[in-house]
Length: 269
Image (cartoon, rainbow, N blue to C red; front, side, top):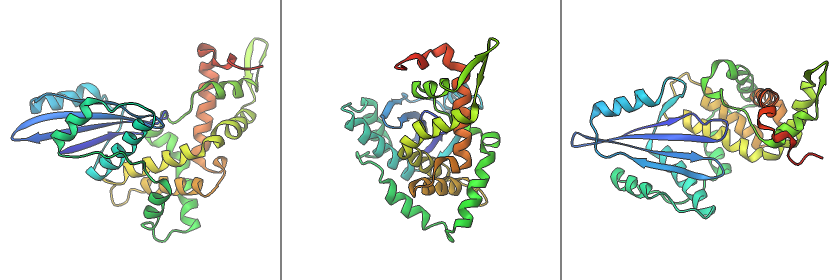
C-alpha cells in the first residue's frame, strides 16, 4: 500500500491518495479532508492496470501540487479526526469510505485529534527543546513563502478581511491606495488572532504531514511543531515570521480581488 498526501492548503484542505496492490491487481482510492468540516469526499476505482495508476498521477498532478508519502498511522489519525468532524456536523460518511476500509483492511473510528496531547508527545522528541531552537525555527520560516512550494496557497480570503482592508484603502487621483501596515495590523487583531486554535491545528497538521518520510537533515516538520507550540503557549501571531507572511499575502489578495468579489460591501455600516 502506498499512501500520498497533498500539501495542506490555505483553506485547510488536503487530499489523500492510496495505491493498493493485491494479486497483481491495482486500485486507487482517496479522501478529501477539510478543516472544520470533515471528510468532504471519498472515492475508489475499480481494478485498474499499473499503467492506469501512473497515468492517473501524470494527468492529475502537473507539479503544482506537492505530494508527500505518509504512513498508515498518519492516515488513521486524520481519517479518524475528520470522520468525527463529519458526524459532529450531522453528516453521513460517504459510502465509498466503507468500501475503502474493506479493501484496505482498515477501520476508521471517529476520534478527534487531541491537539494538546499530540503537541506534548511530539515536543518530547525535540531534544533539547530550548527557546534558542524555537527562535531558529521561527527565523527559518521567514523564507518559506519564497522557497517552500507548499506555502503558496497560505493566505486567508473572506469578507471580514476584505472589510478590514477596505477601511484602510482610499482613492487618490483615481488610484487605489492602501495603508498596508495598518491593514495588516487590523487583520492580525480582528481576524487571525480570533482563530488561534485554527493556526495551532494547521501547523501541527503540516508537521505531522512532513514527519513520516522526513530526510535526516530536514527540519521543516520540527519548525512547524515549534510554531504550533509557540501559538499554543500564547505567542502573538504577529511575532512569528511565517504568520506575518500569511497576513501579508492575505492583505495583498484582498486588495487585488475584493473589487471582483464585492464581499467588502457586506455588512459594513
